[in-house]
Length: 173
Image (cartoon, rainbow, N blue to C red; front, top):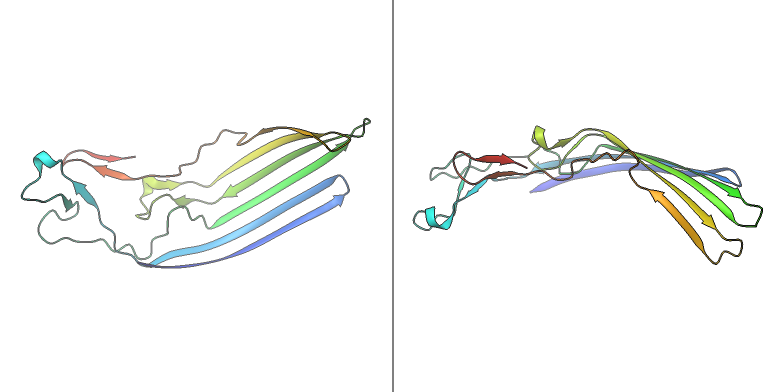
């Protein structure tokens, strides 16, 4: 197969005060298969295979094996937009140490988790955020960090696939 992939990334970092910093990025991705012949396989259990046949097309179980043309589909895990925003604030402490609080958020537009672009394999647009707190000693010899990744506990779909182990049991995982 062949694919066309292009994009644009803009990012910036700002320090409005000596104790504050802001980071941001926006990524645009255009990804599409130009040519891609896929296949839906159904594998038979060796005890049930006939005359050395180990797989047949799910679309056409006859002698003519038809490969679906997936040109125009989007590659897996290719959101069009990914945007991030981060903010850090450092609190100087009276003992000479510091405490830095951070929050970081990312947005991803919808995307497919398979190259077939099945509706069931589509991850909807979502946002996730992380927070952290870092204590740094006055000497700078040690730091202690606490953090929470994915504060909202949102679990995006990362992989999806179709399985068929027989003529009547088609399973989408």
